[in-house]
Amino acid sequence: MKHILITGGAGFIGSNLALKLLAKGYEVTVLDNLSRQIHGENPEETSPLYNSIRGKVNFILGSVKSKENWLKALDGVECVVHLAAETGTGQSMYEIQKYVETNIGGTALLLDILTNTKHSVKKVVVAESRAIYGEGRYYSDDLKQYVYPMERTEKDMCIGDFEVKYPGCHKPLILVGTTEDSLVHPTSVYGITKQVQGQLVHLVCPSIGIGAVSYRYQNVYGPGQSLSNPYTGILSIFSTRIKNGNGINIFEDGKETRDFVYIDDVVDATILGIEKEEANGHVFNVGTGVATDVLTVAHTLCDKYGIDVPITISGNFRLGDIRHNYADITAARTILGFEPRWSFSDGIGEFCKWANKQEAVEDKYEASIEEMKKKGLFK
Image (cartoon, rainbow, N blue to C red; front, side):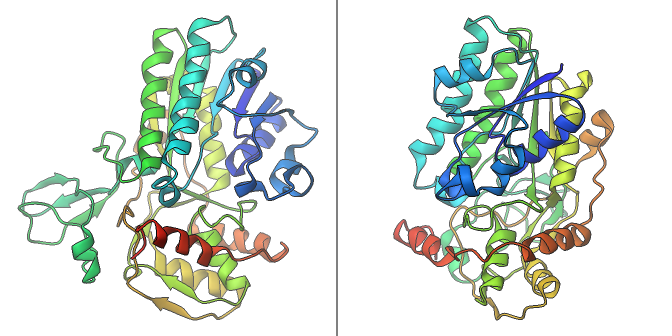
């Protein structure tokens, strides 16, 4: 396979993947709508992500919701890497139709075309998300088994009780890595759409002789990610707050954890799935296998930037947020030969070096919080 289509290929993961594939000799087509939320108000002129691939790929400005755009983009393509999606767990809870139409509808349209028209596609690689798991995987000393706590209640969180619970368990649950066969129980509309995307691809593609691979990316970060989009994760949010001299509001008690995986590792893992036949039919977690708490992230960023701002542990919370989740990456190691090369400390250093070279961007955090308050999602 030498001709790759990347949907969402002007985005953070997509543009980095495109550049790496080009360096390896692939022909790359990109289908992207240059969303203003990601690329800014004048993306074709000012978006660093788009400009990094401009003139190097066959670029199609369009939407995965358009059959005409899909047909044009698929011409001569042998592998589709489907990254295009509306992202953001909080935003998905009040822009439900938008998320479903783009994420599920766009994937359904691709599969409908692959099923009913002539094409040259041999493999589809789709981005799922760690969001499909909801809460992570735990071990119960009481029950002597792995358990999967359901969503935390607003009542408990309002009194500062943020840890997860499970019926019949009195001792604290022990957090362990989430495996690909763990319970899928998303706590956001975004998570549901990513779950369905993966299910559709793995159901339909094998039935029409196309290889199917999906990736459940953890919290991806690195140089080039949007600093202006308040829905892209805490590294961007905290960085923009710090660089504008604004304090950081730590939700809950700051002990909630995520698995932060550097962009280069994500690109390498994705290319392994493109190139290896043995990847077909599999779902892979992509992370570091290390849990890092939010308070550590905030202090590390302040230290790397050399800027002290107030860090407040407020006890605020967002309905639908999970407490903990980090990846078990045994499958990616065993089947793909994937091994993350970047530690959080090294990766965050590179991210901060890059961020320090960027022009100051408007801090839209407060506006995003007000939006969630109006929807009853922020407490």
